[in-house]
Image 1: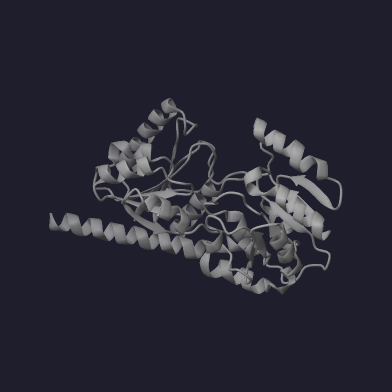
Image 2: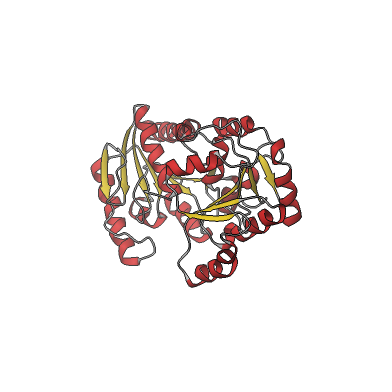
Length: 351
């Protein structure tokens, strides 16, 4: 099949540091081509993913109306040149507008909360040619309220990038790895680590909004360099693998409904248990008492840290191998493509 993939215009595919959607798109490009498919990519001009054909976006801001118009034209042109059997968008549904009512099978994938208004009109305009996927049951549950056909396909990681560590040192630290902002719960991780007197390494980007700066200055900075609390900044893939592998647990006590959170699967791939909260997609990733603990307050968090040695690190790795590996997830998308392509071919054959 010929499959045309799109990613949001802000970041290259693959990303240089963070960018979960862009990583998934790159894994699809690689995985699908290794299975004999021809893959085109519409993405940021600096993308280096090895697609068969590449079409750079003209506009670089998803929320800019002028850029949206330019990118709609880019996608229309790419479809005319590439002539795909399937169009799979990880970008904006608005870009699909000129081709929504065409018979070309289209997939719109959501890695964030879908807008019920846009998904509703998209499904109506597409007249059966548009299928939706969400990166979790949580996201699909939101989307289904607006109508349309939805299927959950979880996010994934490249297992070969993450070294399984069967054991860690008795004094292994806790690790917080995410954006350092309130909704990710870095302050809660600090509170728990200090309470149980356990070292904590914080890694990730600071947020440069006024709210983000205030959070850093009030909730994070006062504790750094004390009681074993350390901040090391952003980390690349190699550093991430080493950091997670040496951790007793990754603790990211989220304060919002996480759509998925690839970092949780990355931790499990290293054999590292996860401590988080039962919100959003986390109950779909972490099995309570098997891959880690989902907690609701400081008392439960401290208890989870105390019991972290009871988690079998082999089970954590197996969880990713069976559910969140690139091979498993690429296979699910490939099956979806084949079913849509076959259905479309049968319709044409009847006509």
